[in-house]
Length: 399
Image 1 (cartoon, rainbow, N blue to C red):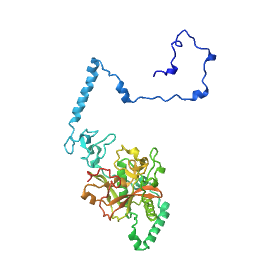
Image 2 (image 1 turned 45 degrees about the vertical axis):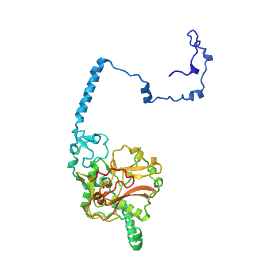
Image 3 (image 1 turned 90 degrees about the horizontal axis):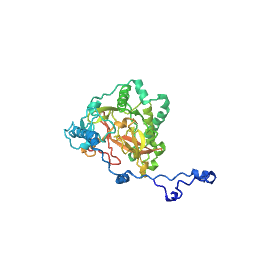
C-alpha cells in the first residue's frame, strides 16, 4: 500500500547526503500517542481481486504432464459415477437424490429407502445392507443395567410426592360431572403391573437408544454452546402459548415421578424394515393420557438450519426469530424420539393418527407433550402429525 501524501518525503529530504537529525531534535511520541491503535486495514473481496487479476498460463511441459493426468482422473471419476442407478427402482434419474454408500458404492434414492431419508446425511453414510439395519434385534439388558441406564431412583425417594398426587386425583373424582364436561383433564399413564413385562418395555427403549448412540433423558437438556435454560420462556412466544392448568401440571409431575422410579407407560419400541424404529402400545391406553414429554437438547433454530436430524421438534416460536428454539433428540432423548408421523397427504394415513403434539407453558417454561387423541388398543402403533405448527416437514412419502 502506497504511503499517504502527507507522509511522502520531498526530493530534497530523500537525498542521501543529508544526515539524520540529532537525538535531541527527534520527536518522541508520548504514551497517549502510543496507545492509539492504527486504523483497521480494509481488505478487498475475492470477487474484486479476481476481476483485476491477470491470467496465468502454465508452460506446455507442465500442462502435458500433471494437469493432463488430473483431467484423465476427472474423466474416470465421471465415468465411474455417471452410470450409477438406484438399487431399489433401477433408475438413474433425480441424481441429486441419489446417495452413494461409503462401503459398497451402490446408489439409493433417498425416497426409495425404507425408512426414507428426508435430508442428505452429513458425513459417511451406509446403506441398510452395510449398516445392518435390516437385521437389528432388540438387545437384552439385565435388570441392573436397566436401572443404571434410566437412572431409576428408589421408591422411598419419591413416594411422598406420588402419594400426594394420587390424593389429589381422588379429590377430583368427587367433584361434579358437569365441570368435567366443560373441560376434560389430562390423565396419567397406567404402568404395566407385571414387573418382567415392564423390564422388557424398558429394555426395548434402551436398545433403540443405544443403537443410535443416545443417552436417556426424561427432561429437556441444556448443553454448553447451545441455548441456555433462561432462553426457554413462554413469554417470548409469538401470540402467546397455552398454559397448562394447575390440575394438569400435577398430573404431569405425577408422570415424571413414575418415570423416575421405573414405572413407564405400556409401550414397546420395535424395529420395522419399512418404518425404522417405531412404538407400539403394549397395553390399553385411555384417551387424553399423557404418553411422554418430548425431550432432547434445546438449541436455537438458527444453529440448526443445516442439521440432518430428522426428529427436531419446535419448542418456541418467538416474535424475534433469533430467539426461536427447537428440541434436538440426537444425543439425549426418550421414547418420544421413536414415535412416527402420519402422511398428511393420505386419508388412510391420517386415520392412523392416535396422538397429538401440544406445546404448553409449564411454570413459565415451554414444554411439548404427546397426548392420546382416543383410546388406543394393545398392539396399535403410535402416530402423530409432524406438521402441527409450521407445515414444513415433508411427509408425502410416509407410509
